[in-house]
Length: 238
Image (tube, rainbow, N blue to C red; front, side, top):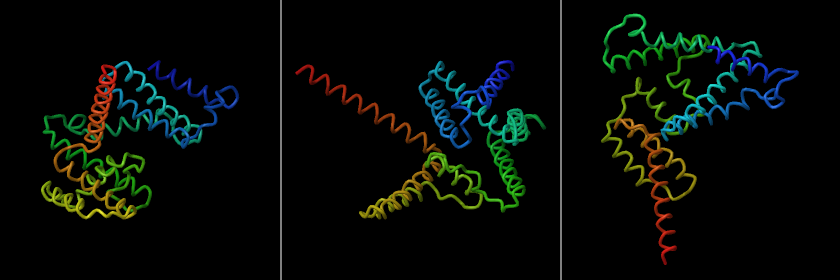
């Protein structure tokens, strides 16, 4: 905990109005948010590369983002880092009753159902606090990558809408391709529907669409670099 306390103290010092860092003093939630997103992606990148040394550093950078936002909130009188930590601790206990309340062996499916039910209840509670109608699609961050957000929206909607079968989605996807317009504006909207349907098909097949596209990107990069390297070898050998 001493390391955490030191990090919190450093952030307070950086934000000190008199002798803190001029750059850090000028930041606010909006200016820091892009860095938060970037650091999360860099954590993911280190994990995908299996680089534990990089992961160590990137996790520190991501932790700094949490500390930064908590300090900004503390200065504005909203909450502090301890409240953040307490909040997530309480949430973990609440979402794992099979561990903390009634320990016992449960199937993964039962645990998942319980998790989703607890999350739905939390959304209703948040809506009640805001005096708003509970929206099953509420809380799906707009800043998420589009494929990931589409998957989350579809996952939330499945409680009220029966998801089509994989075969039905394959047929729908094929038809959407056939119906694509040659007019750019219309094609943009139609391609959006194609991608949304492709996400639904991925979910029906048990595939993470975001990861599937990332893997496809990686395969393309590998082929491109291999072809380029082969071409250079041929030029050198000529």
